[in-house]
Length: 270
Image (cartoon, rainbow, N blue to C red; front, side):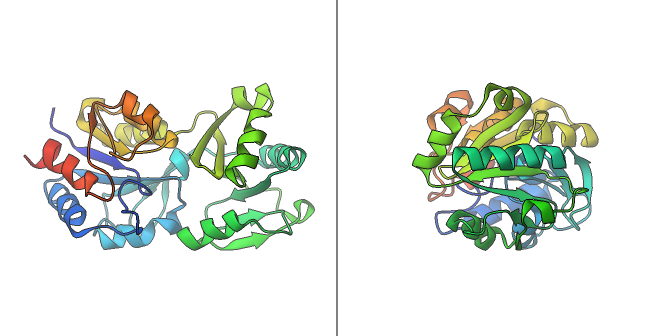
């Protein structure tokens, strides 16, 4: 079957090491889009961290979509309106905020427009996330939080040594009842058990009446595993971790070598 949807991770995949989209990648995406292929940026970032890249790729138009927060939200590219969402509750927030304190790591929560931290000593990794995505940071003590909020994702964040030690001590209940994944050495993402990039791509495929064989997914990290396994054509970046390479049908070049363009040229444009 011809590929009609390409789900593309951003950091480490679409973006080169300088966090840019190269001209070759841009050209390949544009040619695929002009053939009627849905180009779906599929990322752990919130919509605000995707918007400028949608504009750069001329994807911010009707009929185009993006998948954000590691699959929790499926959104219209033109304005960020959700067509599917699966979020966490305020009770989930309270549980993991307390757990983060007990484990000695920093914590943050994202709704659709803001990043909230209860940590007075705001983590350098919270600042990094905000500067990378453009999402505003709001310090809120737990008792000051709006209890009606829901969250696409929660995060434990810290240097890799501290975070890995905390992950090793996570209770089995948390592992069983939530989707937990590392998206970077210093980020542990906590999502609704039903959520991952694969379920996000599946929800969009159903909306667009597409079969798995008509979908290609490209990624490099642990949070890309589910969508690469789901897609009919799973592509690992040359810089991908070993577990992503193991489940992929094809390994393209690295993000420093226009790997996304190479895969699109091979599977869609030739």
